[in-house]
Length: 186
Image (cartoon, rainbow, N blue to C red; front, side, top):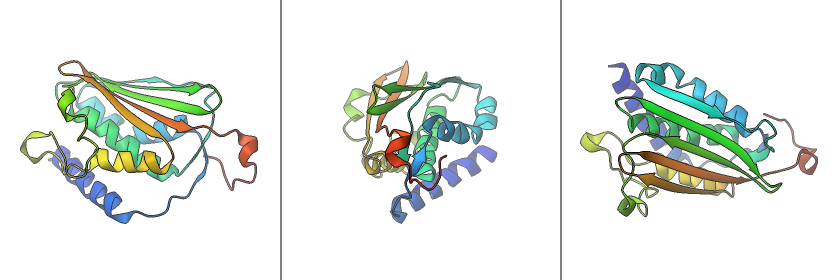
């Protein structure tokens, strides 16, 4: 019953995010903190599903100009998709690192079912889902794509059926001095 409630909540949240299209409120933000806050929402459910969460954060990660609420939504969708892909348990791995001084990279990997390559071109399309039995509305990855694009970033997928999936997100980095007048840091 609880997992069904979470599933319905996710669908409603995605529908609202997809339809809202509000202007982002950008501020200087630490991606490691945003990811950690998002993971705190999933720790209990991940434990129930026997999903081990492995964190590898770059302690010197450069800040990004971001809307933290939107990035939390994007990461939440990716983390929940990863959990759904591992019904028997597995490992969810999140790695962050600087790419020089111009960008940061976030890699989100799971040891789940994987995505067939023939689906790659469609997975970011609205209402496209590979989940059996109506397990999703097909909006999660579309919302993720829109949020990352709004942040002037990129997202790509790499997957092996039966071994797992990795989503790689690249976001432009900002030096704190570039945005010294930023209202607040997250």
